[in-house]
Image 1: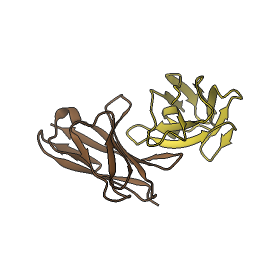
Image 2: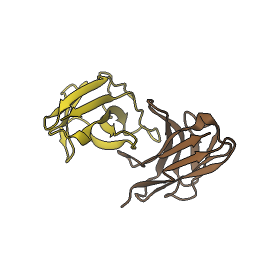
Image 3: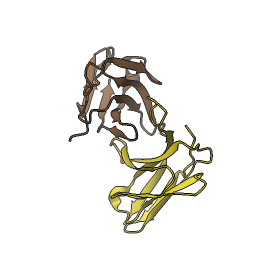
Image 4: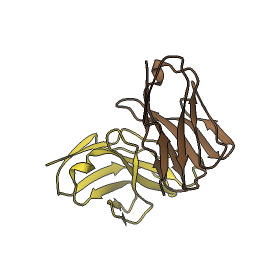
Length: 112
Length: 110
């Protein structure tokens, strides 16, 4: 699975959009981009995933560049409860049993 | 649909004691996983299962055992607890695309 690079930490004001970047320059054609987050003391939570097209669900939007070498997770109206570590993970659907590999992620701090 | 459930939420063990961490999922997923997460660190894979009756070791299996007699249940057994096993344990299940995690079990070995 391709490796990802994320900033260590980011700040965001409550009510504003949080834009979390991720670089995955070695991504291959059959690999998806996944985003998970882990709120303190809780299990990781699935947010969204995508292959080529931009995706949106009730939690967030995922913007993937045309060359697929980077992506941005957007939380449109961040709240204090969105403070968490956000993980960008690249994984192919043909990876069999293999689990997700969680790197260090981005610590997002949402402030009042 | 409860997702992935884990019991207990918290446990204190004495060195040498044994216990079983329970994990159940109601999504009919074949793939299930056990991780541990030490403070400030990432998740490390202990064991995984690709279906009932099939289990295999992950990155850090020493000191643990698992079984998978049904699709729903994937218990993790600690036979002789050691202080190094103090951690938060997460169970997860996966369909083809998405992995779902339980709330975790905090284990303290003294």
